[in-house]
Image 1: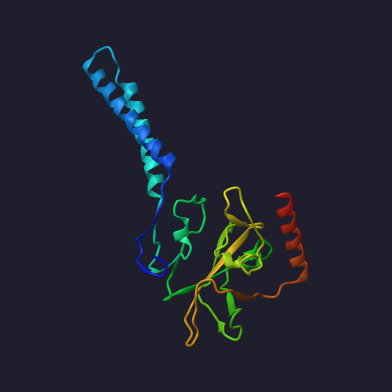
Image 2: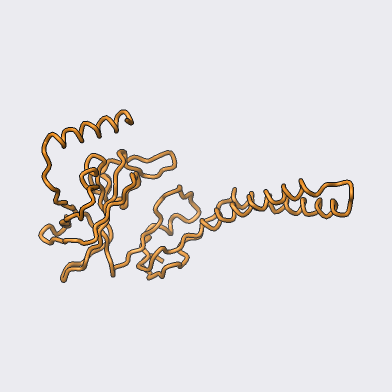
Length: 239
């Protein structure tokens, strides 16, 4: 239930897919038929069991794939924490789009900053040095965090780490929904992550907006102009 503590591996949501269930049942029926044909072939010298065995193996592989898909409909807790899903109860019996967020697991023992870096800004961060980052919460700008072990995930992404980063959620990232109803950023971005240590008297919670300031080494204007032109050409013309 919403607000309960869950442990890693606990089952949170069990979904079903009628088409998937029907496909598995259909394969079971076909396997039963092929097993009958295989027994008949082994009793007769005129029937080669080889093709039947090949078809049976193909069906078994297909069933194994469908069972893996069926098992993925069981959502388990990726970590221990407080189960936050205030509107999940109203979704019973409804369609769930692929990639749609169902719930959040909040571990109040440890918090992590997740922020986005645009494609235009990311090249200045991939120079192999440690990042000097300052974090200020929007709700409490006077309190400053200086996180260590800051990491930049070197892959372009479109799905935001939190809906709070989108313009509808109060952030500044423009988003739109795709054909499956999943909210995606209009422009690709990179994600920067940093663990935040608790400060005395400061209560953190999931979804708080913050601004991360990253200290960069000064570079000549000409090198920045060249980089900006190159990035614009790459983004517009896929060079």
